[in-house]
Length: 275
Length: 142
Image (tube, each protein chain N blue to C red):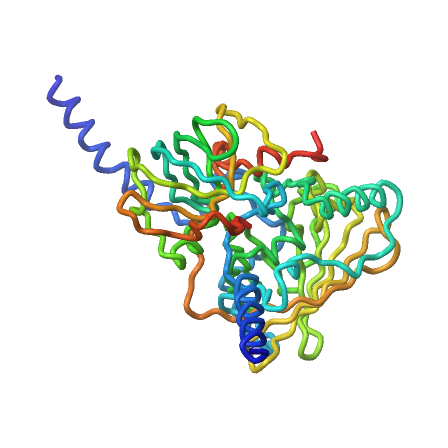
């Protein structure tokens, strides 16, 4: 009797994987149901069917590694001056930040506390940015904490505002206008997310980036047009350059929980942060 | 004579602008440090972290200004330090060194009870020098 049981068990062990394999990948995906997040009725950017769709050839390819051009001064990582006219609390925060800067005091050093730099500051961190352009999407990875952006080019709409998860780099959609890639970003997380010297943003914050390849592809120019009717009047404009850097790659950078145990400046730089 | 002065002026301008354009890969401002003061600390390495986005050093020693004991020294990213000659093996626990740092502008005692400074230069155990070790200079970490 035990011998028969053993044979039955052995047979099941051998047959079970065959039964599983008999299911198609589609069936197994279906079986996993909601475990796999899905865009309702829409292909992902890397779906072969989406990538294969016929589209006009793009005017340029951003694929490469880039480094913000600070050759005219280190302070060019900032997006001002020129600054717009700040209003409300932002006006007070801006004045406080400028005063702290003049006194060489840290103020709202959220990035030093491991909060993500977020758009637009992530673009001008003093680290390389790798970009990979596909027909449906541009992936941008700043080496600074390997912060990830994706700019969808496949004609999709923004996420449902009732469901979207606000993030520090926001949701970016791009389209081509002649020789310019126009990228519009919204749904940007506001918590401890500041521009330059502690300038706050609201949920109304929007960024448009007008991207061009210049200098025969050796430089990347991005004009920033930023609006936030809660915090400033009109458009805040600034144009930045990045240089192609072919002799480097990005690597792994992590803001570990105990990083700041070893950094005196970040322990001194918590003034003005949101709690 | 005037030509020599002019040459020196040009060299200084070049040196200054080179410093400004030196690649620095790290993650925040150095506003907290007083880059016009340099403290000399003679001591023993208790920790050396060769990691992104910042390397860092702890040493136990005697400071020319400020309390003796453990000092935590903030550095820039290894990618930048390598261009100054630093290696992962440049320091090990137990090494006797002379460290030069910019102190915090408003000195605080750090969470682990240590004092804080920004790396400017070091005389290693074998007598070799990395960075600026003449009692002057401004560190960089951002």
